[in-house]
Amino acid sequence: RKEVEQDPGPFNVPEGATVAFNCTYSNSASQSFFWYRQDCRKEPKLLMSVYSSGNEDGRFTAQLNRASQYISLLIRDSKLSDSATYLCVVTGYSGGGADGLTFGKGTHLIIQP
Amino acid sequence: DTAVSQTPKYLVTQMGNDKSIKCEQNLGHDTMYWYKQDSKKFLKIMFSYNNKELIINETVPNRFSPKSPDKAHLNLHINSLELGDSAVYFCASSRGRGLFFGSGTQLSVL
Image 1 (cartoon, rainbow over the protein chains, first blue to last red):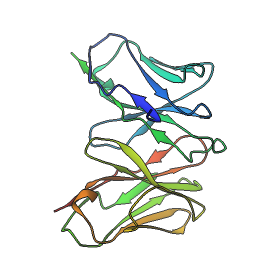
Image 2: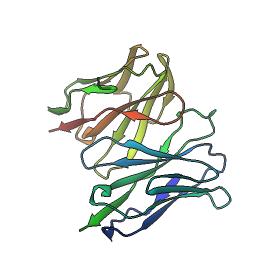
Image 3: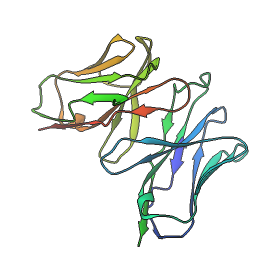
Image 4: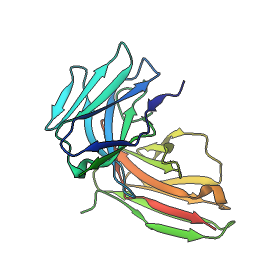
């Protein structure tokens, strides 16, 4: 089983719709979880951290399910500018720092007008 | 003003050559990294340095040698370039949670 798995997509979604995708991880001792966004030919940028209680940032909601070992990202009222690749990132058992970060291969999202 | 800057942005070279990519961060972070993103867009860590000391060294050919003269700089030197080295190389830094990436260096080996 791969360490961090994501559905590569692409997810084609009409503007204004709600879209959600998941990411599963294999290391039950993983400490920290993040979603990154990567636009075409650009560097990845931190979108949001994922907390155990779930967290929301505007139209974006992240959830963590430790029992089933997955995290999710929900985007409401999707905009054309949300089109990007969303990378799931999980850290290993290394003291809470950024060491041992493992990236998923990303989910490609295309918002259509 | 750029937080993590790497140069050059594009690097086109012949097989067998030696090349370097430079990276600097002005965020005061203790940890710096090199990542490789291949044609399938998979982002994989190569090296991690913490305060100039090597922390992570993934399975990378020894043709790749990182150098950290101080904690704000982490350069990557590549000897005897091969076709399979063609990829985008990202430098990154962190202090605890989250990574800040440079804009990437697209390396094309002909």
